[in-house]
Image (cartoon, rainbow, N blue to C red; front, side, top):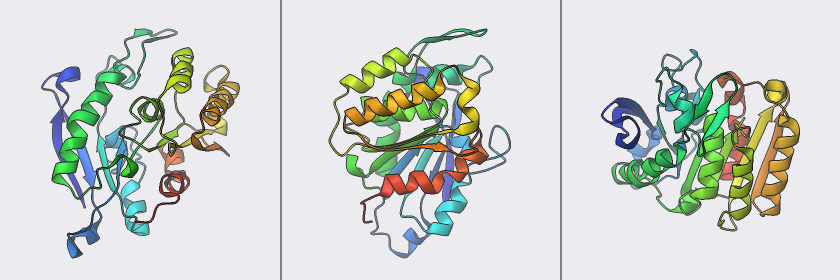
Length: 256
Protein backbone atom coordinates (compact mmCIF):
# COMPACT_ATOMS: atom_id res chain seq x y z
CA UNK A 1 0.00 0.00 0.00
CA UNK A 2 1.32 3.40 -0.95
CA UNK A 3 -0.34 6.58 0.25
CA UNK A 4 0.44 9.99 -1.23
CA UNK A 5 -0.48 13.49 -0.12
CA UNK A 6 0.81 17.04 -0.36
CA UNK A 7 3.10 18.56 2.25
CA UNK A 8 4.74 21.96 2.60
CA UNK A 9 8.19 22.90 3.85
CA UNK A 10 7.54 26.44 5.12
CA UNK A 11 11.19 27.09 5.98
CA UNK A 12 12.20 26.37 2.39
CA UNK A 13 9.32 26.97 -0.03
CA UNK A 14 6.51 28.51 2.02
CA UNK A 15 3.07 27.21 1.03
CA UNK A 16 4.20 25.55 -2.19
CA UNK A 17 3.07 21.90 -2.06
CA UNK A 18 5.16 18.87 -2.86
CA UNK A 19 4.27 15.20 -2.81
CA UNK A 20 4.95 12.81 0.09
CA UNK A 21 4.83 9.04 -0.28
CA UNK A 22 4.53 6.30 2.33
CA UNK A 23 4.71 2.58 1.69
CA UNK A 24 3.27 0.21 4.30
CA UNK A 25 3.36 -3.59 3.79
CA UNK A 26 -0.02 -4.92 2.65
CA UNK A 27 0.08 -7.71 5.21
CA UNK A 28 -0.22 -5.12 7.98
CA UNK A 29 -3.98 -5.35 7.40
CA UNK A 30 -3.87 -8.99 8.49
CA UNK A 31 -2.34 -8.10 11.86
CA UNK A 32 -2.62 -4.46 12.86
CA UNK A 33 -0.51 -5.02 15.97
CA UNK A 34 2.61 -5.19 13.80
CA UNK A 35 5.14 -2.39 13.89
CA UNK A 36 7.87 -1.73 11.32
CA UNK A 37 11.23 0.03 10.98
CA UNK A 38 11.21 3.11 8.76
CA UNK A 39 13.43 4.06 5.85
CA UNK A 40 13.29 7.77 4.94
CA UNK A 41 14.31 8.55 1.37
CA UNK A 42 15.19 11.65 -0.61
CA UNK A 43 13.83 12.42 -4.10
CA UNK A 44 10.56 10.72 -3.24
CA UNK A 45 9.15 11.20 -6.74
CA UNK A 46 11.84 8.83 -8.07
CA UNK A 47 11.29 6.05 -5.54
CA UNK A 48 8.08 4.26 -6.54
CA UNK A 49 6.43 5.28 -9.81
CA UNK A 50 7.92 5.71 -13.29
CA UNK A 51 5.24 8.25 -14.17
CA UNK A 52 6.38 10.52 -11.32
CA UNK A 53 10.13 10.10 -11.88
CA UNK A 54 12.16 12.97 -13.32
CA UNK A 55 13.51 10.92 -16.23
CA UNK A 56 10.65 8.44 -16.54
CA UNK A 57 12.36 5.65 -14.58
CA UNK A 58 11.91 5.09 -10.84
CA UNK A 59 13.85 2.88 -8.43
CA UNK A 60 11.02 0.33 -8.50
CA UNK A 61 11.04 0.21 -4.72
CA UNK A 62 7.41 -0.91 -4.51
CA UNK A 63 8.05 -4.01 -6.61
CA UNK A 64 11.11 -4.96 -4.57
CA UNK A 65 9.32 -4.56 -1.24
CA UNK A 66 6.28 -6.53 -2.40
CA UNK A 67 8.32 -9.36 -3.91
CA UNK A 68 10.49 -9.75 -0.81
CA UNK A 69 7.71 -8.99 1.70
CA UNK A 70 10.27 -6.93 3.58
CA UNK A 71 8.95 -5.65 6.94
CA UNK A 72 9.62 -2.00 6.25
CA UNK A 73 7.84 1.33 5.96
CA UNK A 74 9.34 3.71 3.39
CA UNK A 75 8.60 7.43 3.73
CA UNK A 76 9.80 9.78 1.00
CA UNK A 77 9.27 13.39 -0.04
CA UNK A 78 9.56 14.95 -3.47
CA UNK A 79 12.49 17.29 -4.06
CA UNK A 80 12.27 20.95 -5.03
CA UNK A 81 11.84 21.11 -8.82
CA UNK A 82 12.38 24.86 -9.15
CA UNK A 83 14.27 25.64 -12.38
CA UNK A 84 16.90 27.63 -10.46
CA UNK A 85 18.53 24.37 -9.27
CA UNK A 86 16.94 24.71 -5.84
CA UNK A 87 17.33 20.95 -5.33
CA UNK A 88 21.11 21.40 -5.14
CA UNK A 89 20.63 23.98 -2.41
CA UNK A 90 18.09 21.99 -0.37
CA UNK A 91 20.15 18.81 -0.63
CA UNK A 92 23.49 20.33 0.34
CA UNK A 93 24.47 20.81 3.99
CA UNK A 94 27.05 23.40 2.95
CA UNK A 95 27.29 26.30 0.54
CA UNK A 96 29.41 25.59 -2.52
CA UNK A 97 30.29 26.82 -6.00
CA UNK A 98 29.90 24.89 -9.22
CA UNK A 99 31.78 25.92 -12.33
CA UNK A 100 29.51 27.62 -14.82
CA UNK A 101 26.56 27.68 -12.41
CA UNK A 102 27.69 30.04 -9.65
CA UNK A 103 27.28 29.75 -5.90
CA UNK A 104 24.68 27.64 -4.11
CA UNK A 105 23.59 28.38 -0.56
CA UNK A 106 23.49 25.12 1.40
CA UNK A 107 20.08 24.61 3.01
CA UNK A 108 20.45 20.95 3.83
CA UNK A 109 20.29 21.65 7.57
CA UNK A 110 16.85 23.26 7.11
CA UNK A 111 15.76 20.22 5.12
CA UNK A 112 16.92 17.83 7.84
CA UNK A 113 15.37 19.91 10.61
CA UNK A 114 12.01 19.59 8.84
CA UNK A 115 12.46 15.84 8.41
CA UNK A 116 13.37 15.08 12.03
CA UNK A 117 11.10 17.59 13.77
CA UNK A 118 8.02 17.59 11.51
CA UNK A 119 7.93 14.74 9.01
CA UNK A 120 9.23 11.94 11.25
CA UNK A 121 6.87 12.79 14.15
CA UNK A 122 3.95 12.80 11.71
CA UNK A 123 4.95 9.40 10.26
CA UNK A 124 5.38 7.93 13.75
CA UNK A 125 1.95 9.22 14.78
CA UNK A 126 0.02 8.16 11.68
CA UNK A 127 1.67 4.85 10.74
CA UNK A 128 2.65 1.61 12.53
CA UNK A 129 6.31 2.47 13.05
CA UNK A 130 9.05 1.42 15.39
CA UNK A 131 10.12 4.99 16.18
CA UNK A 132 13.39 4.33 17.99
CA UNK A 133 16.72 5.35 16.52
CA UNK A 134 17.72 1.69 16.15
CA UNK A 135 14.84 1.19 13.72
CA UNK A 136 15.13 4.44 11.76
CA UNK A 137 17.15 4.53 8.53
CA UNK A 138 17.73 7.05 5.72
CA UNK A 139 18.80 6.69 2.08
CA UNK A 140 19.29 8.59 -1.15
CA UNK A 141 21.39 8.95 -4.27
CA UNK A 142 23.58 11.69 -5.73
CA UNK A 143 22.82 14.85 -3.69
CA UNK A 144 20.38 12.67 -1.74
CA UNK A 145 23.30 10.32 -1.06
CA UNK A 146 25.28 13.24 0.31
CA UNK A 147 22.33 14.17 2.50
CA UNK A 148 22.03 10.60 3.77
CA UNK A 149 25.69 10.63 4.83
CA UNK A 150 25.19 14.05 6.43
CA UNK A 151 22.06 12.87 8.25
CA UNK A 152 23.85 9.82 9.67
CA UNK A 153 26.73 11.95 10.92
CA UNK A 154 24.95 15.11 12.11
CA UNK A 155 21.63 13.58 13.17
CA UNK A 156 22.95 10.32 14.59
CA UNK A 157 20.56 10.59 17.54
CA UNK A 158 17.71 9.94 15.06
CA UNK A 159 19.23 7.62 12.43
CA UNK A 160 21.26 4.50 13.14
CA UNK A 161 21.78 3.33 9.56
CA UNK A 162 22.01 4.95 6.13
CA UNK A 163 22.57 4.17 2.46
CA UNK A 164 24.44 6.74 0.39
CA UNK A 165 24.41 5.78 -3.29
CA UNK A 166 26.67 7.78 -5.62
CA UNK A 167 26.98 10.50 -2.95
CA UNK A 168 28.02 13.95 -4.21
CA UNK A 169 31.22 14.05 -2.16
CA UNK A 170 32.64 16.75 -4.44
CA UNK A 171 30.44 19.29 -2.62
CA UNK A 172 32.53 21.00 0.08
CA UNK A 173 34.85 18.02 0.70
CA UNK A 174 36.72 19.84 3.47
CA UNK A 175 33.52 20.42 5.42
CA UNK A 176 32.44 16.82 4.93
CA UNK A 177 35.81 15.59 6.18
CA UNK A 178 35.54 17.71 9.33
CA UNK A 179 32.01 16.46 9.90
CA UNK A 180 33.09 12.82 9.74
CA UNK A 181 36.04 13.44 12.05
CA UNK A 182 34.06 15.32 14.70
CA UNK A 183 30.56 13.81 14.60
CA UNK A 184 29.24 12.26 17.81
CA UNK A 185 28.49 8.71 16.72
CA UNK A 186 26.93 5.78 18.48
CA UNK A 187 28.95 2.55 18.16
CA UNK A 188 26.20 0.84 16.13
CA UNK A 189 26.31 3.44 13.34
CA UNK A 190 26.04 1.62 10.01
CA UNK A 191 26.55 2.94 6.48
CA UNK A 192 26.25 1.49 3.01
CA UNK A 193 28.10 3.65 0.45
CA UNK A 194 28.72 2.96 -3.22
CA UNK A 195 29.76 4.59 -6.47
CA UNK A 196 29.41 3.38 -10.04
CA UNK A 197 32.55 2.52 -12.00
CA UNK A 198 31.22 4.43 -15.03
CA UNK A 199 30.61 7.64 -13.07
CA UNK A 200 34.05 7.95 -11.53
CA UNK A 201 35.09 10.38 -14.25
CA UNK A 202 32.13 12.72 -13.73
CA UNK A 203 34.07 14.78 -11.17
CA UNK A 204 37.80 15.32 -10.73
CA UNK A 205 39.45 13.06 -8.18
CA UNK A 206 36.36 11.00 -7.36
CA UNK A 207 38.20 7.69 -7.11
CA UNK A 208 40.75 8.96 -4.58
CA UNK A 209 38.13 11.07 -2.80
CA UNK A 210 35.76 8.13 -2.42
CA UNK A 211 38.55 6.00 -0.95
CA UNK A 212 39.62 8.82 1.37
CA UNK A 213 36.15 9.26 2.85
CA UNK A 214 35.76 5.49 3.24
CA UNK A 215 39.01 5.43 5.23
CA UNK A 216 37.82 8.29 7.47
CA UNK A 217 34.57 6.47 8.16
CA UNK A 218 36.41 3.28 9.08
CA UNK A 219 38.70 5.24 11.38
CA UNK A 220 35.55 6.41 13.18
CA UNK A 221 34.53 2.75 13.57
CA UNK A 222 31.45 3.15 11.39
CA UNK A 223 30.11 -0.25 10.30
CA UNK A 224 30.81 0.42 6.64
CA UNK A 225 29.80 -1.51 3.55
CA UNK A 226 31.61 0.16 0.65
CA UNK A 227 31.34 -0.85 -3.02
CA UNK A 228 32.42 0.20 -6.46
CA UNK A 229 29.51 -0.96 -8.62
CA UNK A 230 30.78 -2.73 -11.77
CA UNK A 231 29.29 -0.89 -14.75
CA UNK A 232 27.27 1.33 -12.41
CA UNK A 233 26.32 4.78 -13.66
CA UNK A 234 24.49 7.84 -12.38
CA UNK A 235 20.88 6.78 -12.99
CA UNK A 236 17.79 5.41 -11.29
CA UNK A 237 18.11 2.19 -13.26
CA UNK A 238 21.58 1.62 -11.81
CA UNK A 239 20.49 2.54 -8.28
CA UNK A 240 17.53 0.17 -8.53
CA UNK A 241 19.94 -2.71 -9.10
CA UNK A 242 21.70 -1.83 -5.83
CA UNK A 243 18.56 -2.14 -3.68
CA UNK A 244 19.32 -5.73 -2.55
CA UNK A 245 22.85 -4.72 -1.57
CA UNK A 246 21.95 -1.71 0.55
CA UNK A 247 18.92 -3.42 2.06
CA UNK A 248 21.19 -6.24 3.23
CA UNK A 249 23.36 -3.65 4.97
CA UNK A 250 20.42 -1.81 6.55
CA UNK A 251 18.87 -5.03 7.84
CA UNK A 252 22.06 -6.88 8.75
CA UNK A 253 21.74 -8.39 12.23
CA UNK A 254 18.12 -7.27 12.54
CA UNK A 255 15.29 -9.70 13.30
CA UNK A 256 11.91 -8.18 12.53
